[in-house]
Length: 292
Ligand code: NAP
View 1 (cartoon, helix red, strand yellow):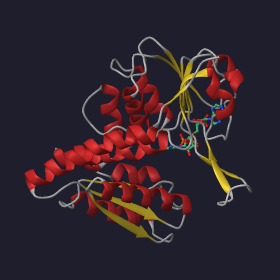
View 2 (cartoon, helix red, strand yellow):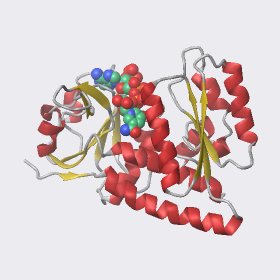
View 3 (cartoon, helix red, strand yellow):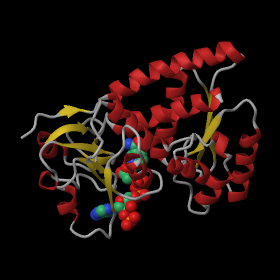
View 4 (cartoon, rainbow, N blue to C red):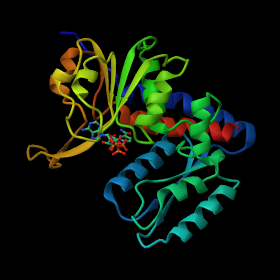
């Protein structure tokens, strides 16, 4: 049994945000205005609103300007694409995000493609994904980039390790697998990318020196799926009903923390692991956009 240490995203995020705030001040004194991020929220999804408001608040805390653009659920795809075009041209704006998921009648891919890569601080545009694959400068997708920064902050060894990523979404699993396999630190892993068609997942995950769980299934990864001494990064985030809490719920990840943590060398908890790092990466991308 290993004695585990926490990959503390709050602590790491705070350290990085202090650096970002310094960078924002420097930019402001150099060119008269600091970084400016806009977030577009379409519809009334409660979780999306919480995420967007957290992003806006984080901007204020590091001295960025932020604009929250809320559009009704009935917004048409054309209206949203028109709004994106306006934001692309807005010279007072360094970057913007369109919060996902979008209402069903809007094609999210069309919207992603319409965002100019120069302002795509979520890093979802194919040009930025291509730049990441080729190791060229660009915006990295926020969650995988936050995980990389977390591993770097805690000096976690990655070279030569077997990294198993569970989940192949375009925003988390797939870019994560690319970043962990690149010739850089953190990186230089041998990567296995698992998904819902993967056969005998536990046999694979038990071979992982670094296990990144991003499948979106509450407490799916159990102790028997994890090797002693592994580094485990839990990306999932779920609200579970809990009558003992005042709020009526608690947050859990894709990993059964209580039984998995004692087997780990390092583990990123939920909450307080990957979540705060995702927002920090968005701030980093916005600062980068402003410095360009
Ligand atoms: P997603 O788009 O739903 O993708 C889930 C992936 O997991 C898919 O590739 C799916 O395979 C795979 N999968 C599902 N069930 C599986 C199983 N039983 N075994 C192996 N693979 C399985 O999810 P996502 O957007 O990547 O998000 C994943 C989780 O991370 C969610 O809980 C989300 O809320 C959370 N998240 C957190 C943050 C943060 O900042 N903390 C940011 C983003 C996402 P197929 O491709 O075959 O369907």
